[in-house]
Amino acid sequence: MIESVVDLSRLQFAITALYHFLFVPLTIGLSVLLVIMETVYVMTGRVIWKDMVKFWGVLFGINFAMGVATGITMEFQFGTNWAYFSHYVGDVFGALLAMEGLMAFFLEATFVGLFFFGWDRLSKVGHLFVTAMVALGSNFSALWILIANGWMQNPVGAEFNPETMRMELTDFYAVLFNDIAQAKFVHTVSASYVTGAIFVLAISAFYLRKDRHREFAKRSMTVAASFGLASALSVVLLGDESGYAATEHQRMKLAAIEAEWETHPAPAGFNVFAIPDMEARKNTYEVKVPYVLGLIATRSLSKEVPGIFDLVKGAEANVHRGLRAYGALQELRKNRKDKAAAKIMKEDGKFLGYALLLKKYRPDIENATAKQIEAVTWDTVPNVPVLFWSFRIMVALGMFFILLFGIAFFLAARRTLDKHRIFLWVAFLSLPLPWIAAELGWVVAEYGRQPWIIEGILPTFLGVSNVESSQLIFSIAGFVIFYTALAVVDVYLMTKYIRRGPDSYLGHNTDERAKVVRKLVEPAPQPAE
Image (cartoon, rainbow, N blue to C red):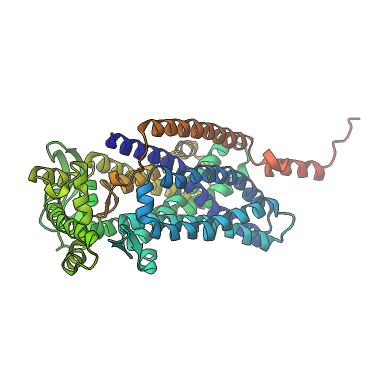
């Protein structure tokens, strides 16, 4: 029964989170592209750049509205589906989510209205400031959410209080400057910039293939190519930083991503291809490049990358220390002045979460058998094949984006973007790829943290609410129906405005303006004599 509630709660949050994240990266990426385009408009005064801001701004607005609608439901789930988790981390998460609302969402929501309705009421520079504030709000929103998520991956700046039985904030700056959170933020935001650039590139390629809005599309592609190339290169560099942070704080996740079962002499080799077998606990086949993993993960030739077997042994030691802390906790609950118990909690309290993993097998964990402890230690290993292949597909897509933007930048520099029909077709077909890469990135980040909802502190199965499975099935069905309806509306609106192009709200586009100007300046045809 408990497992079904946990599985259903995880499934619901996964569905809503992954669906919500379809809109987040495009919102962030397009907001910065709008700032770039409007800056060119303010500097040059050319109307076509204003038209570009307005058109891409309409698509940004549709996506922004969908992101807000799908994001609100996620925060409600903290109370409905993850009540104990909310109680356990409320002292930490409350501040971060409040900052996200005050500094990011309100900022973004306020200036979005001015962006759409302020064109005739604000000066050029004033409207550019508004657009920049929209972009700043979008990035700030990602910052606070990723700081909260980064704390779940590396819970610094907080301590467990035996009296309140919850984590309490002790150092806000440690939470704010958590290296996992900072690495996740810059990596995720760069990936969002790639998503926005691919979107503009693909839609512009569609117009060029259809021989429509040519000047508009070529300028849009040029901006997307240069911005996208810089962003794609940044994703790779910042992804390396995320991997290095995982080496320091999430070694089991790194070992699973690399299907590294054994600890090899430094520097470790990198599995380019492997077939991990969870039951046999080995790779049935692998192609390894020497030294590469050691260089990437440790940035040295002398440090080892621990394998899964050694990490499991370490987890067993942590379980025993956690059981010692659990016994001390029981004594402290009976007598808060027990100095011996307080000393044990101070020494081994950080391992308490490993003992709590045994709650999956029995309520009286102090009487756990050796076999149950062994099972718990292997529960700390996430699904290796899922992480291994999710990571590699994501990296392969990242390399493809660099190639795509590199070619686009080269063609833009030569002013021949519209001359290569095959490239335009490839660019258009690449439209869904950044979303696939982004979703796989979240799979690696969140699925790779299991069995922890807070790394090393609170097991996932202990964070759920006391609800019935039937209630969860009903709510999941409701979310699926609601989100499907939103998806239909989003696809309809996006397709409608993309098919109609920039003239969908301007009344005419740049190409048509040129035709009108030619008719006005060309001499009228003389009647035949």
